[in-house]
Length: 153
Image (cartoon, rainbow, N blue to C red; front, side):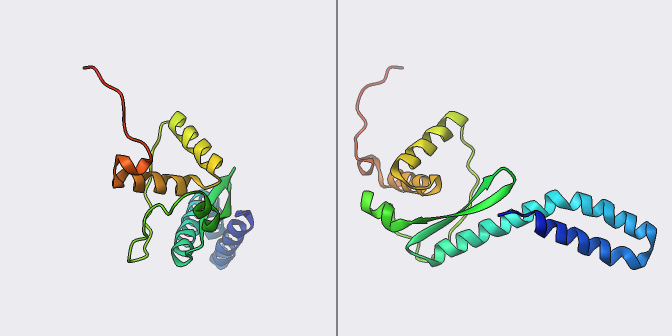
C-alpha cells in the first residue's frame, strides 16, 4: 500500500488552506508540509496496526498483520484454519476479546530464528510468538518436551 498519495493529499490541503494568508503564511505552510511527511506516515502506520488488531479480534478465523516493505505497509491475512491443522490451539482468547500491542526487542539472531521457525510452520511471527508465550505460561510440559541435562555453577 503506497502511502505517498495520501501524504501528498494532506500536503496539498495544508498549503491550499494557507493560500488566503498571503505569501508568508503559504511559505510557512510549505515548510510545515515538508515536516509533515514522517509524522503523517507514522500516524497512518499506527492507524493501520490498530485496524489490523481490531479486525483480528473481530474474526476468529484469521489474523491481520501490517508488515513494512521499505516505507510502504502491506496487510497480510493469515487463515487460522491452516494453523489449527498443524498445531492445537495455542491458548483460549481472552473473554473480553481485546488484543493488546507491546513492543518486543529481540537480539537480531533470536529474531531471525523466530522468523525461520514461524515461516517453517507457515504462520506469522506474531502468531508464533503468541503460541510460544502461551505454551511457556502453561509450563514446561506444554512445550512438548521436558528440560533435561545438568548445569554446573
